[in-house]
Image (tube, rainbow, N blue to C red; front, side, top):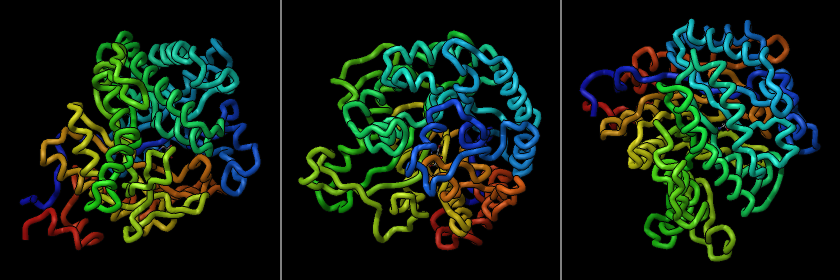
Length: 450
Ligand code: IFM
């Protein structure tokens, strides 16, 4: 419990917002998402990414970076678009690399430390045409691309995220089929996931060979798996199994280098041993897992959100995006801390069309992050997903995650109440008691002695 009036984060804590190239830049027509959008029923309401939030116009990006800096943020996570930089195999676009250099300079001029993601869901069309991440040569292709990026941006960037959410890319694209290429085959999904992790290990070492002060990690989307009925041993076992497959196997691979089932048979892969300087944690939700003997091909488990819990906005498929569970972030941090690496929360956010939940969401999740830090978790930064409402993949524009709203006619941005709350927190380097009193009064006693 805190004696002071602010739940203070450690000195040097990074306060950021997370974004991605395809979701923000606009006019990216040379990747597999652009062609996916053209297929009927793939995107909610047949919407298009189009000009997105127009960040490829550097004046627009600069104005958003001003907004981030004015909130008191000191970092920003963005990604580079492979299809812009390498539009044809082995053909590099010097103009695109130059423009990314300018974009990053705009961040640095504003005191925003860039965290650059090298792969965030999109692949150039030429790669997709060659089988994407099922192609055994993808590691060579990605290494060639990353080498060019480090050569072009390495004088300005030392903080890298190799791949965003391999599990979401593999699961959505190859198991559920709601992301391109729309495959529904668990074996192919696990092959893609394994390949992405192996390539991550290779790229981790490549970046360090090119830049001696690099800080390199991977962002994993961690859903915290809790037993639907904590008193049921079968539910507890089911939750542990799903957690192993969805989370532990990934963390184990990138730290000890062991490929546990379903990624492998426990073999240790040298390129993956100790292959991260930090673990990137993307936390949105907690899932309740029940044992279900009818689901033999789904780990005998049924996944649901707590029916009595608070749920966020509905998705295209009709269900809620997730359960709002700040304590889940604490549990996630404690679990990740066991791997012995510094942690950054590389994403945390909520789809909330009217911003009535987000202010409380931010304050309570950060209070739980503070609690984990008090217990020794080495958490070094927090990136809110996202700065401006952006293109949410197959959900398009309906799910709104931004601190700022965008008017698509004029391009104008308006701050939401949550922007003000997050700004106050960032400027205080922690969660002020007064913020909790105002927006989450029931939680105050959990953190501040009376
Ligand atoms: O918008 C996505 C992002 O691209 C990856 N992580 C989850 C976000 C919200 O769904």
